[in-house]
Image 1 (cartoon, one colour):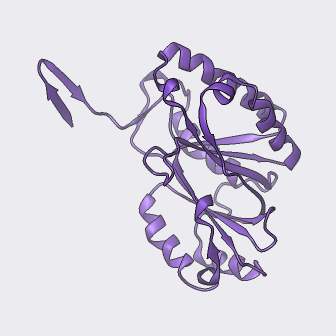
Image 2 (tube, one colour):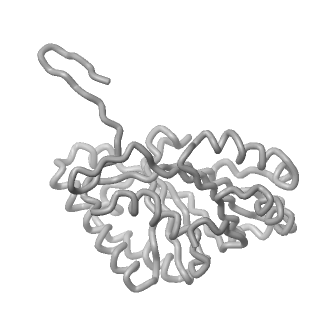
Length: 240
């Protein structure tokens, strides 16, 4: 698609781009639904196993009758197809949806990734479906308008601070992140959905605490949260 304005021509390109001229017109979508009113998760596990859908079922740490269902798909129509059908039949149909905790996002590239397929598809799947990392904290965030007015160089320096932290916690096997863009997808107009996944809960909380001191969090975030804290009850086996 191109847009003409005087002597200028704007060509829209929605492909994900990486280093060395890589370009992919695909990305991975993740959708988190959180429910209350679940006294026994075992029927949910049975329904998910029969469905053969790519997903993670969490026990909600902050709600003794709560569960979270993370759905994973390259095709977002699955969320209004097979996943929707699953949620509208027993045992999911009897649960109470906590819509304030619904999060939907897509993997994205920054243009510097050495292996675009790894970054967009393999790494996120391995992270959320790894049985060795059962703890998860999911939350949305929205940056201030002031961040968008910064130069690309200034934005890069601010984002790099977060990247260095994330890499340090990941290298130590303390926390592994999933970063999803949700522009126009989130009912509250958030920009990103973040998943922190790991072996234990404390390091995930510690990373959030450490990020409070960064320039992005302390100066350029308009909203952060709400937070969903979960422990894996069941995972599909697609990425093991």
